Image (cartoon, rainbow, N blue to C red; front, side, top):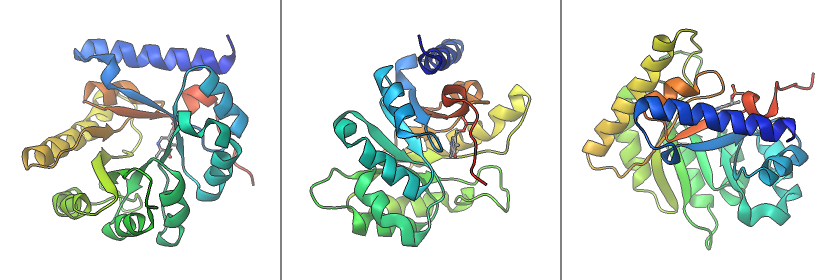
Length: 232
Ligand SMILES: *Cc1c(COP(=O)(O)O)cnc(C)c1O
C-alpha cells in the first residue's frame, strides 16, 4: 500500500472510532481530502485509493488542477474552502461543486449570478467566525440567521449548512467547544425551518472533536498528503 493509501486508511479509522464513541453511523461523515499545494498527481493517486471529494483553497491553483484532471471530472467532487474575493468568484462558480467559505452575502450573490445554466445548483456553506477572532473570516454568529435566510433564497445555489475554522486548541474539551457552538447554531437554523444537512468542521488535528459534536464533513489535508510546503 502506498503512503497516501495508508494515510487515507488511518484517517478513515480515526473517523470510525470517533463515530463509534459518539454513537454515530460513520457513513454519515464524509471525508474531504484537502489537496491544496499538492500536485494533480497526488489527487489522482488518492482517487485510485478510493477518495472522491477534494478541497482546494486557491483559485488559480485549483482551476489548473481541475483542468489537468478533466478525464476524472465525473468521478470527482471539488470543494472550494479558501478565502474568496468577490472578483474571483466566476471560475469557482464555473468549476466547483461546493463552496464552504461563503462569508458574506455579496459572495453568494455573485456565485448565484455566475453559476452556469445547465450545471446543478452550487452547494454552499456559510462560514461562521465561531471563535470570534478579529482576523478570521466568517459571519459573526449573531448575524448568521439573517444571512443564511438571504442565501437560501438565491437561485442556482443550495445552502447546505455551516462551516468553521476554530482557533487551534490542544486539549479535547477546548477543541470541542467551538464545534459544539457551531452545531447549536446549525440546530437553531434547522428549527427555524432552513433545510440544512451539513456541518463542515474538523481538520487533521481535531477531527475527533468535530465528529463527537456532529460534523458531517471533515476537511483533512496534512494527515492524508503530509506537511505542506509553500513556495517563497
Ligand atoms: C488547509 C485547510 C484544511 C486542512 O487542514 P489540515 O490541518 O492540513 O488537515 C481544512 N480546512 C481549511 C479551510 C483549510 O484551509
